[in-house]
Amino acid sequence: MWPKVQYAALSIEHVGSTAVPGLFAKPIIDVAIVTESEEKTKAVIVGLKELGYEHRGDLGIKGRQAFKRPANSPKHFLFIGDLIPFLFSYVALEFIA
Image (cartoon, rainbow, N blue to C red; front, side):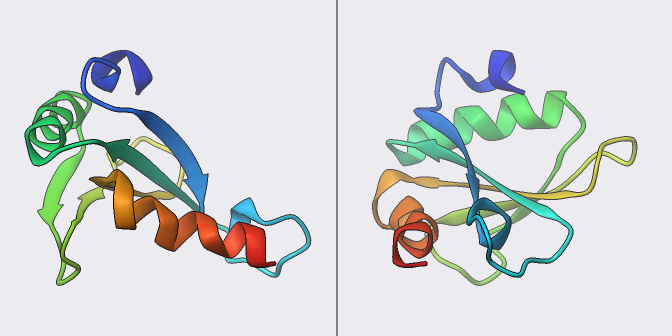
């Protein structure tokens, strides 16, 4: 994934409950691709489509873009968002727990 998005993404982060050691979690990993602008987010969307991801829009959460994973990939949820406040909303849980 990184080779397709590295030109536009700041990082790829493992987020959500499975990222917090010792916390009860569902058996699906949440992955966040962090960008610094809407323009960079659009570029990442193009790269992910080339990998077989289906862009699903923001699903009602402003500042976040969601994707349906390719059928042949391990179970995971994938999102893209601008650095602030998107990433903070996910990573803050790791520091609180």
